[in-house]
Image (cartoon, rainbow, N blue to C red; front, side, top):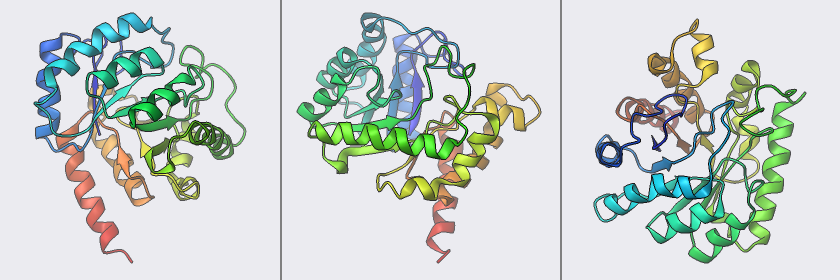
Length: 262
């Protein structure tokens, strides 16, 4: 999954693709580089972010969606936690809704997903972006993630969304400590017991920078590569990344290791 943030303030690439023409160019490039899914986000959820109105989020993502419709062959995911944005994006051709609040912010997203026959990604976040790294961390991160994702997936299924259209994401970096991020990657087989496809998003995140001695966001590709390989070997089905061309190579080799490992 290739990430495309059409925002002025995302932690890694904020402002790089706020201009719709640049965003469209990058979307097409992400497909050429080998991504299987394009994930477009119009609102930053980095630690400390405040959020924006649905109208502004729609204003950012719709021009890109309209322009790439018919030009791109891979499925398009919209990273949003607002039903108004989900509805507008679905109307413009989105196939997947990636909700980082796992329906906590706006449960009406589930109805949009059901009615439009979309896929739904449910991500675990402890707290909310504005305070998630300032509030106390869970004593047991894995238990906290499993409990939250069980509740979210049950809500989605109760709305009429089939289990086959739900993906879960433990939310690496979203309300987790430095140590907990690594623990969750190492214990992905425990999450697999929930019997949903697993998405992992580690790309360029702070815990990688810390492990690398303070490397800035755009110098974390090698560290990201390590987490991508580890995630795949531990059972991840989808990895969300910024450096698509490089991580495609990592994924291809990790897949071969899996294919020959048993």
